[in-house]
Length: 273
Figure (tube, helix red, strand yellow):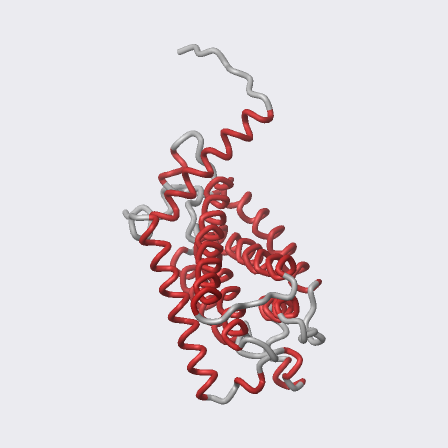
C-alpha cells in the first residue's frame, strides 16, 4: 500500500527515458515483419525498386538531359531517398500509439515516447538503407563524390523532421476521425509522389510549372539537397527558410492538438454498442 518514493536526478530520468524510447523503437522497427533484419532488407528492396523504376522512367521520357551535370543515378537517388524518408516518417508518426492505445496503460509509456520511438525507428531504418545502397553503388558500380556531405545530411534530416511535424498533426487528429485521417494520410503520401518534384530541377522549370511545386516544402528540401550534393548546381528557385517555417508551424500545431486530444480522448470512442 505504501511505497517509498525514490527521487531521481536529471541524468537518471534522462537515461530511463532513453531506455524506454530504445525498446519502443525496436518494437516499432519489428512491428511490420516481426524481424528487424527482414524489415531493413524489405526497406532496401523497396528503395532499390523505386530507384530502378524512376531511372528507367526518366531515361524513357528523355528527362536525363534536364538533370544536373553529374552522376545521373546519384541525382535519382537523392530525390527518392528524401521522398521515402519523409513519407515513411509521416506514416510512422501518424500510426504511432495515441492516448487511446492499449500501450498507454503501461506506466512508463506516454505519447511523447511513442512519437520519439516511431521517429527514431524510421530514421534508423532510412539512414541504414541510404548508407548501404550508396556504399554498394560506390564499391561495385561507380565511385561517387558528394560536394557537401554535411549539408546534404542536414537536408536529409530536414525531410525527416518535416515528416515528424506533419505526422504529428495526423496523429493528433486520428482519435477524432480514424478512417478519415487514415485516408488523408494516404492521400498526402501518394500526392507527394508527384508534388515533391523529385524528378525535376527547380532551376530548369518554367514559372507556370514551378507554381505547381513550390508550395510543397519537400520540393524545396530536395532541390536544396541537390545543391549540396552537386558542385555545379546552385538552387535559385527554392528556399531553405520556407520548409523550416512550415516545419516549425506544423510542430506547434501538432503539439497543441496532441495535448488537447490527450486531455479529451476516451478509450470508449471506438467501442461498439
